[in-house]
Image (cartoon, rainbow, N blue to C red):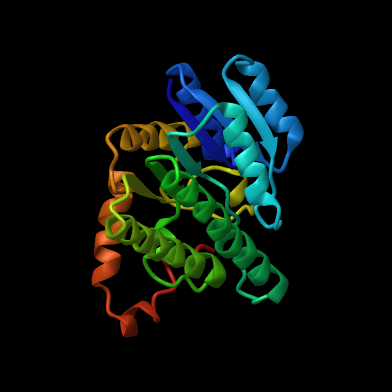
Length: 244
């Protein structure tokens, strides 16, 4: 019996990934802040879904995650789909700090809990949605792009730590482009917008093949390739990469 725990399963990509794994017959532990959304998912497959309300910015989130894992009977795959992001060219400090708390502090809180659980239970698979925004600093969303770069580096560090300790823990760093979720509901004109359903299918395929990193989709993979080639002095002069 395969068991996946999804933090951020109440909407968007996390919800669609949960539905795909349910169709594949997996047991799903679903977590998020909105209990009604969790109950709605559970109603789709009552025999396969266990739920737990979790706010990853709260100190008690690890305890709630462990409760969910126990209720599920264990965990083979931890999937982190929880995150926030906002355009913030005015540099409102409340927005920047809230982004740091969720994408930085909350991310570390949950990923380390999953890592330690797998460390004590003969290994497993940790996957997280980061973003192509971690490739370069985006002037329209400073905290968002910075926290996504941090997530990339943090997963790299944990992968090395697992090797150092000879742990059977695999990692998948998932880097989507723009996805039509509530995260992008600010009426900006986002190019190459993808549906959550399409992105979820790509993610599940990557997880099944235990890919270490994946940029979704090929158009964005090409875009990121060229972004990396742009020198810093030129990047700072490019306004077209920052969504209007």
